[in-house]
Length: 399
Image 1: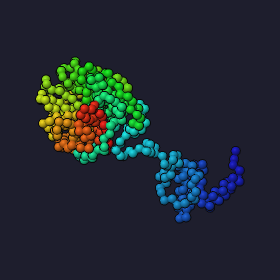
Image 2 (image 1 turned 180 degrees about the vertical axis):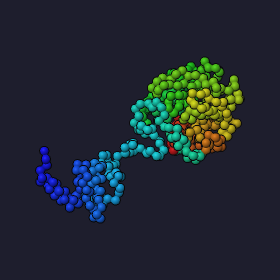
Image 3 (image 1 turned 120 degrees about the horizontal axis):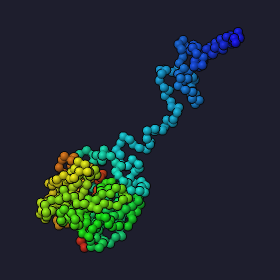
Image 4 (image 1 turned 60 degrees about the vertical axis):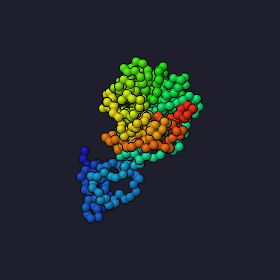
């Protein structure tokens, strides 16, 4: 079969008409036809480039032969396959390069209808909360009675909370026997439910000064219960697998016990659980001082406790609460008189000593404030007051 003689003439005329008007021909279908000439007599690259990248966007209303001064092999700077205002690597409301002050799955004060089984903040976030250098003390606002205990007739003392502030453990004596109790709420905006006694952590002996870990899976307490290596009041610890599981039977923390007549109470954990400050009679005399202990990992035993000389006085010093990654502390002391007052101190890093304590006068509600707990950023404090002739009550304040 041969081509009619008229076809070459038709093709030549068609091609001449196109090139005369500055148009181009799809070179993928017609082979090595010449490119159109621009104003300066050089080949124009507009159509070659667009056809190589894909179909022309119909929304582009500029002339297709407009001057283009970018190289042919660079991609077109408009996005044709996705919206330009969409973040493809994360939600648009998340600050990736700033400090993270909320769990990755939602803010702490948002709706939370289930317990949190673990810490959502990284260690970097915790170090960011502590910040560089010692803390500059900012006074708290006026303390008020904690809303979980407005209708209770028994004494409540020694408050401690999980990091999400959905579980509050405390000691109470509704039946003259001090035991460990719990009050909970479903979310930070929900009301607190009625307190319940935590049977797994309580005994027929004295049980007091609980300290729950930030993730809610470990709890320390002071107890005089029998069954430990040492008699008297010492620290015990219990664990659980999840926030909805029951607590394991507590075991005595024997590595922190001092001489035979010593006692240990009021533990306070650093948020990563690698440092703890507590009150003890390590020397066997009738005086309470603050001690610190550390460990390499949560699977290791605690190291030998050492006294904190810049914080201790000849009088009772106890009930510590560490925050800011362990670099700030609030504790109770009787150095002013026979009643407790709250004092605060700080340091620039764990390698430094704490500063000389100063009284937090704004927290002296009834003249006998003790047993503080603070959020790790130091913005929220919960503590008890023991007014003369009145049951102890739990208060809170913010800054």
